[in-house]
Structure formats: structure tokens, C-alpha cells
Image (cartoon, rainbow, N blue to C red; front, top):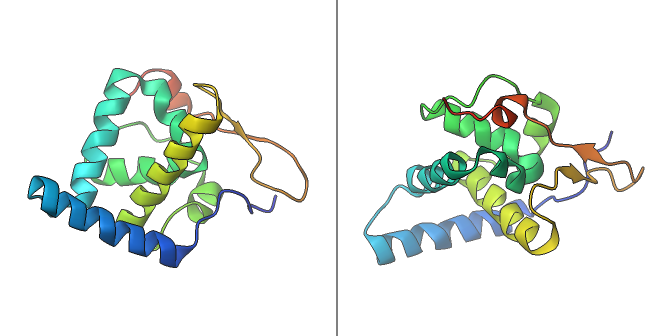
Length: 138
């Protein structure tokens, strides 16, 4: 499978990450965009673990970032998808995941978990994280 869809321009994401960091400093006096953003994601998932689906193919890289920061969402992963759908830095990965989520909330029904990642074949990829479907974190 060739993972060609939902890709963001790395330079645009880097610029957006800088803008978001500046806004966080200006509006809240905080300088840790990654920590703040992952805290927001964690709170969302505490309210409804199945909302991990909002992040589509970026979920796996986001899940790794959350795990690295000490939140156990289980061990299931999808390394091939995670490698493609991540930024050059953890902050850029967070920004990409949030950009995807924003588009997802406008375009898809809640809990949609099928996405066309390969525009050449037209086949759908299914996001299914058994850990999150069971209600992680515990």
C-alpha cells in the first residue's frame, strides 16, 4: 500500500507549529506546546476513548508521543503507518494530528474509522486500536 493521502507540507507544518507556540506564549504564558497539546488530547480521550479515531492515520504517532510522556494507552501499534504519518519533530506530529482532527470533524461522521490512504488503489484503511476500543487509559 502506498500511503499518499492526508499528507501535509512539512514546511507549512513547521510554520504553523511556530505560530501555535507563539500564540500559546502570548495567550497563556506557556512555552511547552507539546506538553500543553498532549494534555488537551489526553483530556479529550479521558472523556471518550473512542475519539482516538478523530486523529485518523496520525493516531499511531500521537499514541507514541503520549506513551513517551507517561500515559499508557496500551502497546498496539502500526509501525508502517506511524512512520509515514508523523512530523519531523514531536511538535510537528502534534500539529499534524490536530490539523487532521480539525478536517475530520468537518468532513466525517463521529467515530468514522475508515480512510483512503492510498489514492492509487482507492482501498480503504481501517483505524482500529484494540487498546482504545477497550477503554484505555486504565
